[in-house]
Image 1 (tube, rainbow, N blue to C red):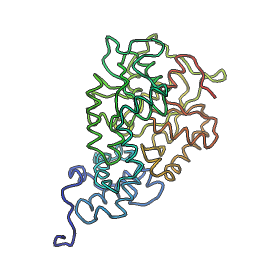
Image 2 (spheres, helix red, strand yellow; image 1 turned 120 degrees about the vertical axis):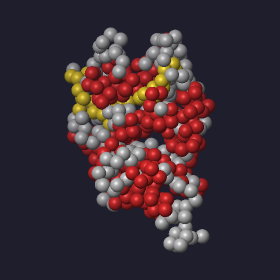
Image 3 (cartoon, rainbow, N blue to C red; image 1 turned 45 degrees about the vertical axis):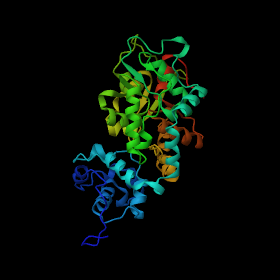
Image 4 (cartoon, helix red, strand yellow; image 1 turned 60 degrees about the vertical axis):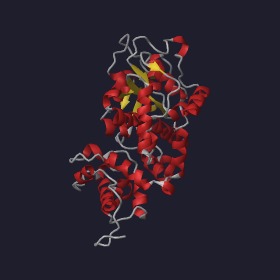
Length: 378
C-alpha cells in the first residue's frame, strides 16, 4: 500500500525524531569521518547517512534498499562526528537505531550474530577465562582479598578480553586492589548494542550493574561508553580515568626504560572513550608519568577495529589501519598503547603482519611493567 505520493510508509518511526531533526547538513562532520575520507562519497559521511535515515523514516526508501544496507554496515560507528557537530547530533544513538531496524532477521551479519550468541554464554567465558589465566576471584599472589573490606567499586572483566588477552585483566587487578573482583560476571552488552541488538544490550548492561556493586571500572573504552549510556556516567569509569584521579600509594609510579633510556610510547585512543565520554587526557597523563609520550597525529582517529568492523569488513578495516601503522613506525616509538581490546587486537595483528619491532600493549600492562620495573618482552 502507498500514500498519495506513491511512497510506502514505514510502520512507526525508526529513529528518534528529535535527534534526526537536529542535523542541519552543515558539513562539519565530513573531515572527521574516516569512511568519507576513504571514499569521498557523500553517502559515506555522517551527513549523507542521516539523509538516508530521513528517507527511510519518511518512506522515500524501503528497508531493503541496497544503499541503506551498505551504509548501515560501512559506518565504523566511531562517533568522531559528534564532538565536531555544532547542532549536538548524537549520531551513535541514531546508528544503533538504524542497525536495530536494518539488521533484523536475515539481514543480520552472520559473524555479528555468532559473536552476540557467544557473548551471551556467561559460563563459557568464566570457564575459558579461568583456563587462559585471566583474573579471577582471587588476587594475584595473595596481594589482597577478593573483596576488600573498604571496596567502593568493582572491576569489570571483559568477555572476549578474558579469553584473548588474559594478561590485561591480571594487570588491572594488580593495579586496582581496592576494587571488588567477581569472576562469574557476564557481558556488558556493548557488542549487542553496536550490532542491531540494542534491547539485549541494555538488558545485559542492567544485569551487570546489578551484579557489580558501586562504581564499575572497565579496561575497555567501548564497554565504558555503553555502560555509561545505560547505567549513567556516575556508575562507570574507564581504568585510565580511575587511575589518573587516584594518587599512587608511594607517589612514585615507576619508570619504563629500554636500553637505558625512558621508553617512547604512543597512544591509540578508543573512539567511544574519546568521542562518547570525552576521556582522552587521563591515558596520556599516565603514560607521561612513566615514559616519554609521543603524540601520534592520528591518535584520535579510528584504527579500523571498531568493534566487529574488522571482522565484518576486513578489507576496509585494513585500509584504515595501514596509514596508522606507517605513522607509528615513522614516530620511532617502542610501544603503542591501546585502551580497548578491539584496538589492541587490531594493532597487534597489523604490526605483526608488517613484522614491525613496535609492540602493542594495553595501558594496564604498560603501567604494571613500570611499577614492577619489568622491561617489555621482545
